[in-house]
Amino acid sequence: MKKDIEKLIYFLPIPVFLITLCIGSYHIPIAKVIDLMLYKISGYTFFHSVIDTNSLNVLLEIRLPRVILSMLVGASLSVSGTSFQAVLKNPIVEPYTLGLSSGAAFGAALALSFLNIPVQISAFIFAIMGVAVC
Image (cartoon, rainbow, N blue to C red; front, side, top):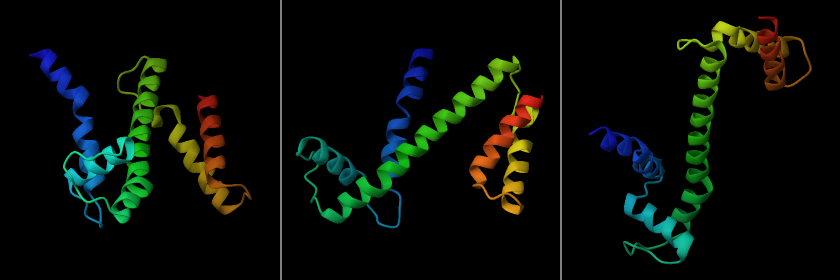
């Protein structure tokens, strides 16, 4: 029973990945998404959908990079949360515990108000300084 649940957890991102490629203002059915991906990889289609350039461009140029990037961002956030928990040996730790969020917010506000550097760089520097002070 436990092995079945583990397999489900490992393979759950695949249908979620395919469904998110279908969602958008330009509707692409899931069978066509699969066909477009297979056509790009191998040159063949499975469901014999009509391959048009609009659908191919929307899928490969807009939706696919966004979905892959969102999955990578989610994975990196989970790794950073796990590393916070491992460093502090506290299972309920959050970025506010270290002062990370407060430092980043202060740096962003300071950059917007007074500094002549990009907001992201200032937020990162002040977040690191907030953690270093703790």
